[in-house]
Image 1 (cartoon, one colour):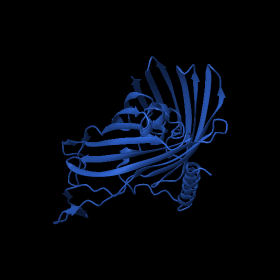
Image 2 (image 1 turned 45 degrees about the vertical axis):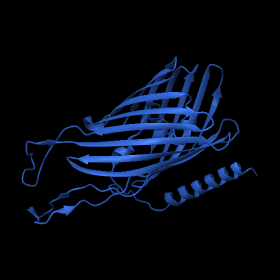
Image 3 (image 1 turned 30 degrees about the vertical axis):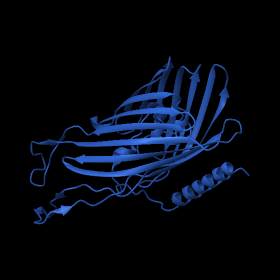
Length: 326
């Protein structure tokens, strides 16, 4: 067996064993046990419109946010800018640039910025508000490198710098993402696995005063360190209908977050002449997220995408994305 195929088999076996292990490690949701929650916000209107079942399909400029291995399919130089109208009037913006280098691979750079907007400050003594406002701002800066190990197998990784600012108390750390994609050669079936936000604990600087039955303690306390929201995904995708004018792609992914129960994401994309796109998906096992849908159009190396996500008792989330290449 060719060494590349051996590596493929080993990686897929290890990934499947790892998923099975973590999927049966606990039967309760460990909500509230990790921080840096803004890292969970998906980026890329195309992928979110498909119910987040996108790491296996990802083959464009948004790949660093889903499966960095997919960036090998982003030809030439590409740019994507996205605006996310997040829950509770919070905002999330992203920009990513990629460039394909012949016989080397594809490199990418990305930046995301999260803002909570102004929030009213409350204290133990003034639970109705002090008259002052504060905000939370978070930033993610990263680089991607993706390359082909064989004509069927690709690998990609992100190295990320994470910064959180909670009203002047700042935390800094790093994290990595790793992903693989295997085109099986049978029909159009491809398999992927990836892990996101793997890194050391992160800790806010500064101190705060704790309270005991409404009385402030004399000595300040340091903030406790916390883990990143690490996510492991295992997925498959195929194109059951392909003609010169039509394409239908379907995908399914098992997702395991380190602070919640396992989820199943399913989705699909219909393309007409690879210029107009209709997308939809559903997330099973999420606390609030259910159906997602969206539209896209692309012409003359320019594309626009829109995605709608239904968060049940919470408000809907809208995403707008612009892409171009040269």
